[in-house]
Image (cartoon, rainbow, N blue to C red; front, side):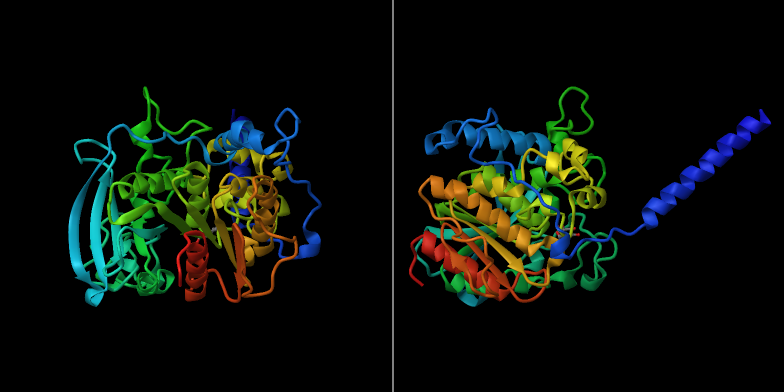
Length: 431
Ligand code: GTR
């Protein structure tokens, strides 16, 4: 008995030690191009049964196949458009930002009785531009009040991630967070060029922490005693993408907005969500990924910077359960991210990288966009012309667009100016 107890104690000790070891062994990202392993990308232009994909077959078969693969293995299936959906305009100003803008706040509900999940949308429209106007839609990280110092914006009351730099310490956004992310949104510049902006806090759809999907949108769709999404059902990125589509449900009804000219834009984890939203929902006329990296525009198989295992470890709630099967097995994953970008074809898609953002693997982002070009070219649109990355600040603007700029992981005025150039080009607008 006593010997048995000792064995158990030693085993216990070993478990504690090995867990502590696993937690302290630091992940060392590869930043050396010569250490990128050789790999073969899954062929976009072969059906699962091996037959060739023609332009017609892309639309009738291959696109659906690729979509199913992403749903089943990467982001999980989302529930689609809800039966009951309504909204309420919470505020409107016809002379916001010194008369330059119309500002609206609209709350979107997923239930008919307006209790439950509320997504608070902020919209700026250029006041003097002829309506309807094209709009950029993007999720924000810390609440709508961060996108501009405009005192008319309601400060979010939702749970937000703590961020010492922004003075958020108790998961609640203080007044002082007004405008702290203004440089990432460039509201005035958008308005000057005739664009509107629609934005909402991503945590209104699903708060960004691993609570095993008890909060946020997921529980609204549990069926028959279900307690968390099944392994092939949506994680948080799937939920954020779903929320972006719910905003389009509303924007389509707003007569100030040109519903044929809605561009979805996202940075970093929200760039991952923007790409997945754009892939699934063809109402997004244009899609922009900014520094979206692993699980966004970057190729998993390069294992450069953030890796598949690393992202599943740091953010176990982002992808579907099945995705964890591919930790350290990138080559077995039936897709890679060039296929995600190809799902957007032939709508315009723009991928933006930053030189110092090695964690997001700029070359991997470029190569995914380049390899998606096969589908664009097959369908008569123009992808990226070469597998050589352009120089810094030398944007390419075909139906697939790309730039890499100097600097770090961020959204800058330079990025926005290129996004607007790209939108001008495809929405056929003069400068
Ligand atoms: C990092 C994560 C990246 C990216 C980024 C962000 O911690 O590893 O994949 O999503 O966060 O969203 O800012």
